Length: 318
Image (cartoon, rainbow, N blue to C red; front, top):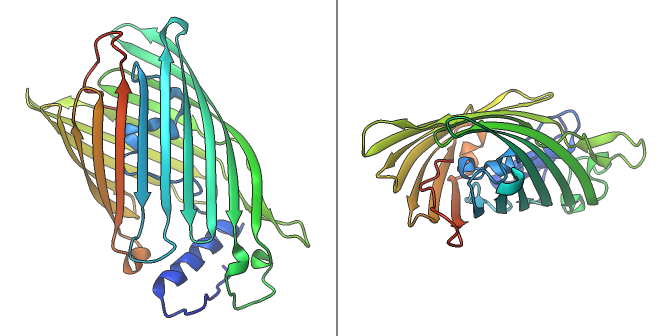
């Protein structure tokens, strides 16, 4: 892997940013290209297009995530997610607007989702989904000072104004469980090439996702909801997220998360009304980056729009 320095290398955070940029723009390394959320279970649309419309009404969620707050240039992600069913057509549609920043790298993404639903007895549903997305990448690599001034990766900035992609997904669910498969991006778009050799320096990799969760009734007051997401990407180890939440009186949600070999965290959510939920999560890094940061903060707000057209199913567990 190519190593380089940034001015004032004594600041540890700059070393970390430098290494992360190498990972993102070196074809011989593997990296997570799509942002991760601790409270992803409340916004599965970012992972699986078949989730569109599954909440039974127009639903919107805003989420902001600030990683590794102790140093400048750390990752920051904001997303707005909205989706709705069309009951008479057994389908749902959705959209996600996302902004993701890491040091000199900025990524803005917009996606649209479609799902077709097949109903089964006992309020169970199989949904098949399609996602169309576009990303806009910008990386001011010229701002970085390298050991090798002729390193081809950092000779010029990267500006990719339009990178289209598409994905597929399937989700089988009821009020108490879900299991799903998805491939959010199916094209290996090249983000950056060597201007001299035309060699691919970075590209979007295909991710295969398996996800599931279940709600157990502990007693009339408490429920327990464990869930997981496994990610497989070529040239990278399997990624596994494990989480569990205790639900008290269907109003207070308290839980913990574990990202295998990467992070642990806790979360708390409050159902303010049948339509409004707020949540907060805090993560601690468990890998070699833990020396450079003091944790990650994430906040979400979700709202279900009922418009008085029927009884609100509350709460929704995912």
